[in-house]
Every structure is written in C-alpha cells, then in structure tokens.
Image (cartoon, rainbow, N blue to C red; front, side, top):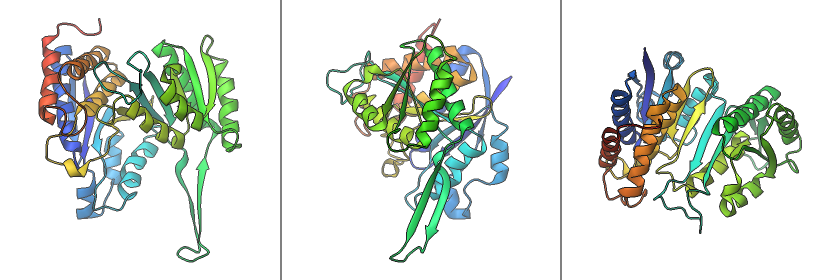
Length: 358
C-alpha cells in the first residue's frame, strides 16, 4: 500500500523548503521500504491573485481522501492579511477537524538557544494546542463600523467536547513520550473565569484516568516566564487555541528559531497536516538561503504520525548530525550552505547510516 500525500508548497520560500523535505522523503522511503504517492495543489497567494479562489470545495474533498498533507507556507505580500490564512489554513483545520496543533519544542546539540546556561537536556517538551475553537472560531462582528461609535466583537468558543478531546490527547501523548510524565494546563483562570473554569474542571476529571501522570497548572503569563527561566520544568503543556499560538512561537525561539521548528495539525482519526511553522519569508524567495530543516522536521513528524517510526527516527538522527557538524547557523543566509545543500547533507547522512531507531 502506498501513502497518499497531498503537497501544498504554497507561497514565498515554501516551495523551496518543501522540495528539500520531499528529497528527504524519497531517501527514507528507499531505505525503509515504504511507498507513497504525491498529489500537488497550487494553493496560495498567486492562485488567489489570478482566480480570487482560496480553497475550492473540490480540492477540499480531495484532501479528505489523503493520508496526510505536507504544507510549505501560506502568505503573500500582495494579499490582505487574513484572506489566505482563513480561506486556506483555517478552512483545512476546521473542515478536516484537525483539532490538535502539536508542537515539539526540542533543542538539538549544536543549535544555539538564546537562553543562558540551558542546553538540550533542559529544552525538550511538547505543546498541545486546541486547534479548532477558542478565539479562532470566527465568531463576532461590528456595530457602527467606520464611525466614532464603532464596536468590534470577537468571541471565543469553548465546548466540553473540544476541550476534553484536546486534554485527553495531551495525557495520551505524555504517556507515549514517557519522560517526565507531567502535564501542565496553561490558562488564565483568574480573568477568563468561564472558559478556563471549563478547562480546569475537565483537566482534573480526565487526569483521574491517567494514573502515574503528574498534573500542574500555571497562568499563561507565568508559563511564558518559566519557559525562559526553567524550561526543564515542562513535559507536556496543554492549552487553548490563542494561548497555544503565542507560547509555541516562544518555544520556537528557545529551540533555535523558525529555521528548525515544525508542527502538526492533527486529526487522530482522519487527515493531518504537517508544516514548518515559519512564514513564507517573501524577501528571501528564490535566493536559496533559508533553512529547510523545519520543513524536513515536518516531514519527520508526518512519517511518525503515519506509523513509519524508523524512517522518522532516521530523519531526526540525520538532522541532528547536520546541525551539530555542518551548519553554522539556522538564520537565513548564515548557514554556510544553500537551502538545497542542507537538504543534500540530510540525505547523505541517511544513506550513510546502516540502522536508525533499532
């Protein structure tokens, strides 16, 4: 059986980094003997400027038949902010019920972190972000728009079902990681007293089903402080959509930057989408200077999700060699190699190694 993978290269540097991820995918598929089929979709800013379409229903229906989606980046300087994000990214997440955003925050040896006296042994945790509700549900409106009396309303939606399945996923992920065996709820119970009352009650109830896993709670502002001061305290953090969006970018910085950070939009029983979490970086388009390692990490996450654990481990081991032995920096133009040369290095280490993850 061949995995059916939808590829959305997207905008800016997205096609460049996705090309390197697919180069690595080909290498590990040959090494670990699995098959896949690719279906490309030209979604993004250029298509929108030509057709005024973001994500046609016909394409959405095709995506629902895939085993996974591999995304580069969405965002175009000539398209008003929000159009592509809502019309493509959020539509895919909501329509495919990708209710988990999974963000590993892991510092590899050889990668610089801005945190003083912290190393790989200190920075290795996961953020589980609710991905389909909260402030991103799109509920709101205007009254007297464009007048001095204008009112803007933006509501956050939290359902028991949405909250519980997110929290349950976090505990299950913690058990699978089997590291510190600790889940921390990130919220704001002292201000958002209705939403996080629901989150906290559900968190306590679900925790009873996972014996041996320690639980903790911290306000989101405290989480931000402790991620900087004591990141070693965390194992799995679970939170709502907006807080998760914020703290995962902080997580990306402490693990070395957007050049290596990847994430998954997960439907545990359906089609999931994997992507580097950096933007489209239009000013670097076509220059071959951006790190493809985040896109390669996204490929690694995708294969792990599909059950190809040895292949996923193979990519991670090769990636770790590259950042420890070869690239000087993950910043654009400072790697010491071009985008494609970094991809070649990952492939080289995959081909040179006899066994991974066994």
